[in-house]
Image 1 (cartoon, rainbow, N blue to C red):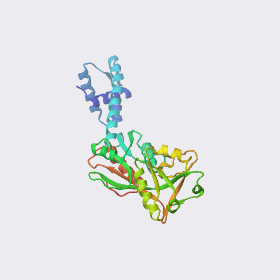
Image 2 (spheres, rainbow, N blue to C red; image 1 turned 60 degrees about the vertical axis):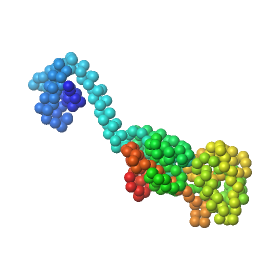
Image 3 (cartoon, rainbow, N blue to C red; image 1 turned 180 degrees about the vertical axis):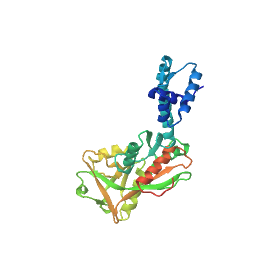
Image 4 (cartoon, one colour; image 1 turned 120 degrees about the vertical axis):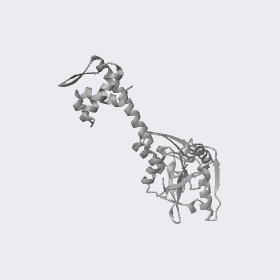
Length: 301
């Protein structure tokens, strides 16, 4: 039987017309090339080359053999390169979970930059409820989830990543629409519409905590509609909403976004990454190192 090394020697000799020049191109000895090609010829039961003092030429059968051997060797080299890249996290697949918008913000920027850097890694993005995403992490169906907040969960690594600004979404005709920034105290008498699904409950808790400091209890309606549906109807009624910066990349008729401020400046919400240390997917480790470098973080991978 012959192996890929024998094919590589034969193809080099055919391309260069000489065992000597083939050996130089492969950085090996001429005797090694000659000996391995002889083994190949004995293995297939026919000569591939006619030898002469001037070099070597392909026999009729050798020409057909080399034509078939070249795509075979190219496919093998490609497979080896692909598997090596997958082992280094430069190819393969990655399942990514999130529960917020991807229209703007750091999460979108990170995924776009990752795809540009590692286009061979096939990324599947899943949006869902926090509980469902964590269950997916637990079963191995999801490699990493990036969620609002920094609540630890037993069995998972949880590392803080970045913070993003909160915005108020309100009709363009609203009296607060003319301001560059809106403060929590400006919202004491407003009526809010939030999505019942994630991350609506977390935004509700932030809203309750901030507005209650001014002595008011905000009127909040938790709606079963999607984030996009809620924002699309706000421009035509008197209600407003609070969204993360990542949701401000989409425009809706008669709707504007204004950044929220508190006493200490911009109102921020944190995002964290969750994954299992037992996950051996090389692409996950490379993604974590990519995020760590991009945002100058200090967690260990």
